[in-house]
Image (tube, rainbow, N blue to C red; front, side):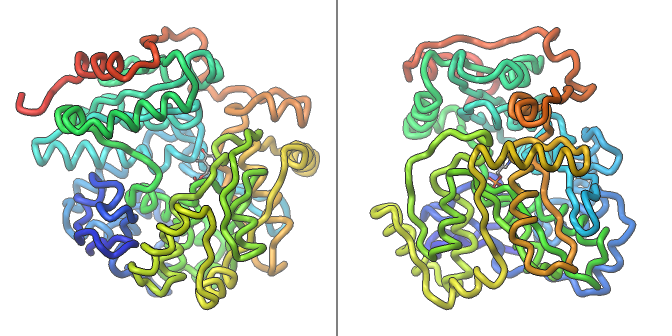
Length: 468
Ligand SMILES: *Cc1c(COP(=O)(O)O)cnc(C)c1O
């Protein structure tokens, strides 16, 4: 198994190289050269496996022998042992033919944990074997920083520094990051906005000497291994509902297109999928694209579902590659034009491929609150403002009434308590593992919005430097 770039001009890499590389050198995203495929009887034989067993079976072909099977099985088992539910990703029935897959039982209560808990361990394993290390640097507006921190905590080959805007993330979000006691976890509160934090991170990656000396790395959503880990739960849901002998539809609250693309990958690997419904909030570039065939950027407006507040969906390029007949040069030109003009169209044949499988649906904030309320009244299920967009989109756009629809629940309601309470009058309680969050000791440094100060701070704290 080797990996090629969607833009066709980067070196072809092996799994461990793709894991550490993130973005390809030609600006593209890595994807498998060919999809591993499971025959129907191979899929049938997956029934009854534990989540960790299923995960190992589905991901193994992607490793191309670059990680020992026993080592990998151990990493997978370890990654999912920290989930709070014995089923890891339980599947709940909402009505006769509608299901909810809860992806939020990991340490930070959001679906990012499913991929990142494994990714941190994979990084550590590969780096340790090479005798290398990495300094992960990232910026967060609140939602995703804790998942990266939980993924990297206590990993010997990794230091992690997460910048957040001082006073501008919620108490729960800040505490989820700053109460992690591990020595390799470093929180920095910046006297500035989220954009300032992002600019600082970009500037650090742009400072070539600093980048090399600190061995800067990222765990962002375009990393192939994150997609790979997310493929597993699509198989899990479909197997429970009769795959491969019955197709299933999926509804996915979508931001960067990583989650729903993993479902598409499962389909390419032989899983019968009837339909994917993309749910958007008011930042609805994908839903508009599905409606008009034109992808057009606009400014970002804050919504009740901040993890879906995106201007462009970076992982969409992976689907675009298939829609462009896997012609890297066409993707390269399309993406460069898109960057210049903020407008993207694809060949008619490509649009047909996408429309055959995907639908889009948007909910504004008022509709989101209404839907939370409606679902609560119908089944006593409290849904967070991201998960409910998947559910409402799936209900609105289901094409085949007799086909089971599974909606991906991406965050625990207690992660977004204000919206849930506004919609239902019920304040969702934090699960046991976080019940004492407000009693834990916080640890972070407050720094000015100055690149030199932040770089000096990191330099002082990184445990092993280049050449040491
Ligand atoms: C990241 C995130 C999403 C969006 O997922 P993508 O893979 O970026 O499409 C949706 N909901 C929650 C809660 C998230 O954290």
